[in-house]
Amino acid sequence: MFLSFTPGRRLLIAACLLIAVAISGCSPAYVMRAAYEEGKILWRREPIEEALKKPDLDPKTRDQFKLVLAVREYARDHLKFNVRGSYSSYSFVDRQNLSYVLMAAPKTELKPHMWWFLVIGDVPYKGYFSQDDALAEAKKFEKNGYDTYIRTSPAFSTLGWFDDPLLAHLLRYDKVTLADIIFHELFHNTLYVGSAGEFNESLANFVGAQAAIQFFRDRWGEGSPEHLRAIEEWEEQIEFSRYLGDVAASVEELYAKNIPDAEKLRLREQVFARAQKNWVEQIADRPNHHYRSFAKVQLNNAVLMHYMLYFKDLDLFETVYQLNGKNLARSIASIKDSVKRRGDPYGDVKMLARNLEEKLLQAGNRGTESPNRVNVPGGS
Image (cartoon, rainbow, N blue to C red; front, side, top):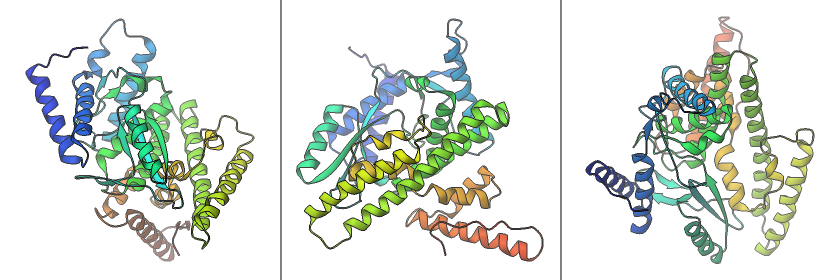
């Protein structure tokens, strides 16, 4: 298809190119493709409010659009997210998969390969708009002795550089999942720590899940089907996070042994097989568990790092939430204030949790309130 560029569209593409060059340490071809694809998404934006005026809009899409607008307003007004104009428009993507995300890790280290970008720092993945490009890059890593994993991505955030639109293919998700995704992506506009991929994504997962619970409780009532489903999805997330942490600890213990790499590779297959077998047994009575696919995926270090990227130490964020009286907006604000822009954000949040617990204990000792002691993960 030939695309004619109006002055406005040429300006938009130029802006995309400038952003891509500014944040990327990648090849010119990669930058040009990323700018072109982002440009297509942005210039196809249509305000959701305008779409809602169309008389022929199907009822399901109308409900989903209204939900997205309600979610962004809730994120802005109740949770104090930096929403700006994000998700006030929607855009059509002319392919089934938006992008392909590559992760790589050495075969005997549970440590992701990092790609460097100028503004956002080191990132444990790299996105491609072409599956062939992602596969070609993966093969290069595999020749150098790395495990690799490629997944598709339904959405991404430009971290506030642009007003991200709702991508039309997200409308296939149910209400709870859609709300969770929107809260997750909007939160990236609010807090993003450079070179801290696991922290950014895991915290956004926590916030997305808890925000969805609170949103559906406030919108449709305590005990509504949507509210209960949001609670169930969070309980499944944190259960999987805890299990994944145990699996990762077992793998790291193996890799730390003073034995030949060939032996480590042989033994890790036993660890992987046992981990998947035990997971099947743990969720045997829940065939619809959201993370049941963990038992079937071909595990390697890159796959494990993909899971760790989104599910690392969710208990820590839950602890801060509990210590803040289950007030999500206050929890987010305290985490945001505690995290330094450089260093170890997980360490910062652990310190925050210990300080919050100490304040509760001191208040209890003064008799002003009765503290409920919460065990801080990783703390003393």
